[in-house]
Image (cartoon, rainbow, N blue to C red):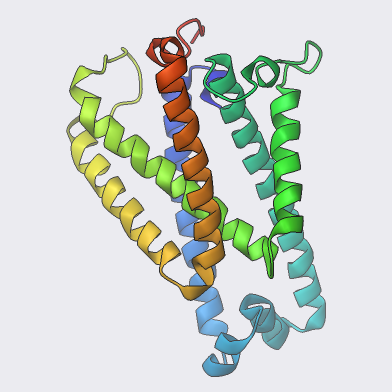
Length: 243
């Protein structure tokens, strides 16, 4: 995603920090407002859609319907974001010959300048999982799509902590200065806590199995590359990218 941004060494970190701060403040304000508005805690806790129930109690059925329409748009937007991010991840790995069928998945449409095969792959996988998963497929997919990024974030932080002293510094790039190491350690601790919260509920069994299956497939593919295509792993990813 950063490869499509202007001045990514400064703009992308600032956008990430800004979006997290904004989402945290707005989300907390919403949670406070909803909590204060609850009239019957046991009833709301037992409701399948507690936020909609609170809106219905306080503002009436019409406001509840407006809320549900807004939530539908929000889910659609979030789905587009996830599909875009995943397709770019597939494209980047394919560009560096580190993804199955990378010859196809690295293709970029000359007119739209987007990786259409990679995007179609992510869309198709999402549709297949929605049909194949038992029970509340959407909820299970949401949980799985939260666990998997948390694993990726955690692995990225661990890798960063392991090689941080060998990384070069770019003049003018975003830099945390002395806060770099404390922030990285806190981020790792937060990621581990989030993973614990996500995988411990009994309802998380199916999402955990889905994530574990993907991790095993990825590990087998990596092992295959390690044995039969070591050159691709030894090549620096994105070395020809004009930042």
